[in-house]
Length: 152
Image 1 (cartoon, rainbow, N blue to C red):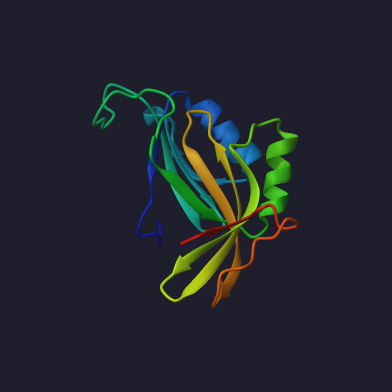
Image 2 (cartoon, rainbow, N blue to C red):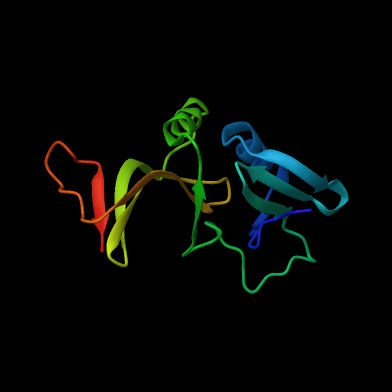
């Protein structure tokens, strides 16, 4: 069925609204669904996730209050982050954080992401990124590089 070793399932308040966003705006593909269970399994460029509409049978550990998924963001690699950002803009969806280049220290090197963040209809935070590769030292931040951030 799937080769992924971790596939998050996001509970949603309205499956149709979530499917419209994930399929229509973000370019995910429907792998399969169980309409009677209000469930869908999605994929985009190898990233997989499940959506399920809230019901009395949902596995809830607490009250579901918007924004859902507080304290978590899902990092999803895409081939062209700028094109996806444009698709989000064209759909009129608000962006949580605009495109930036971020460099994260990982051991003795820095790995770079060109990334932006958007919330889905229920408030789950999605961080889409394109790899900028790896470097041995942190990039300099100068006035002309105002959309660069170094972490670590």
